[in-house]
Amino acid sequence: MNLLRRALGAPSVYNRIRPLAVGGIDLSPFYRRLGADGASVILDVGCGTGDALNYLDGYARYVGFDTDEIAIRSARKRFGSRADVAFELGRPIALEPGMRFAMREGGRTIGAGVVSAVS
Image 1 (cartoon, one colour):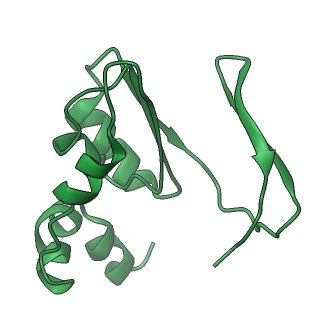
Image 2 (cartoon, helix red, strand yellow):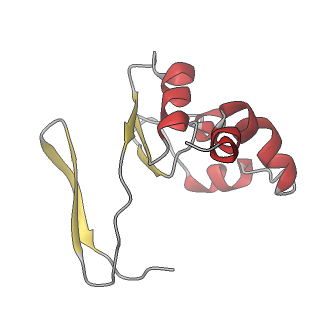
């Protein structure tokens, strides 16, 4: 892993410096719009270090996916003790409209569908 990738992937950079570089975007209005409650299951694709959990007030289960091993390790360290939270390391895949997909957890299918658009 080269030095630049290691520096950019460091949780301290991701959590503190990156928000300054992109204008310190306040994501709390977005998470409020979700309307998550105690019965909601949150699937966070591209979860990074799990920062969304700082904004979510209620949910039954949260599952975060990311392809960055360093970010997933950090997320597990920060939030892994919560029984209703899980983080999974994935690998990037190419998606095209019309492809079918299924999401599985614990040997059970928890969601399925067809990709309608990729942008």
